[in-house]
Length: 178
Image 1 (cartoon, rainbow, N blue to C red):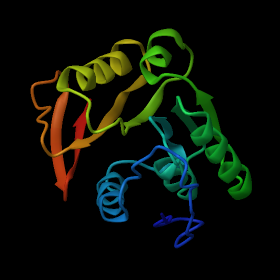
Image 2 (image 1 turned 180 degrees about the horizontal axis):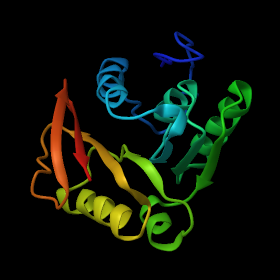
Image 3 (image 1 turned 135 degrees about the vertical axis):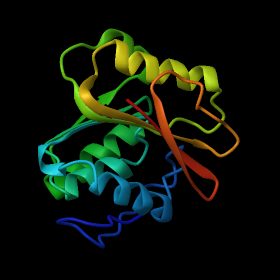
Image 4 (image 1 turned 120 degrees about the vertical axis):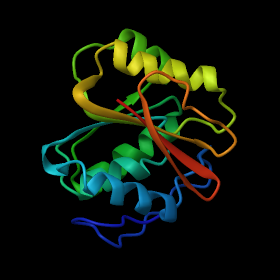
């Protein structure tokens, strides 16, 4: 995995093989950030990274100057790795070890410009709809913010309230909601 742009452009990171993750490919991540570059100012944005895994998306936001990043994952090894890399690279990433669904139902406080979720690819449309709905209805998304769900190409999320577009890159799809 590598950081594509920003302060740490080109930096390669190697996550422990023991982590139960499927990191976003460089190809898909680069395409996603090309879209985001046209829509947001990273230095003025905040990110909630759900199912953060290796922290791949959080590091990309951090490298581009995002001042507020919260990474949530239920796996202790993932949270430990994200904390370690965040400290090494001097990123402001708050890590939370929690089930993402419970986090969205019980946590209060911060709201975010971007909520990115990369749940397991075996999630159903109903589970992904719950993620989107909880993110928006529980006050995590700022007024002009976006929820972005990465999912398998075999799912169509266009029926979920707030859907704006989907972009496919190989076997992955990014669906956008506002």
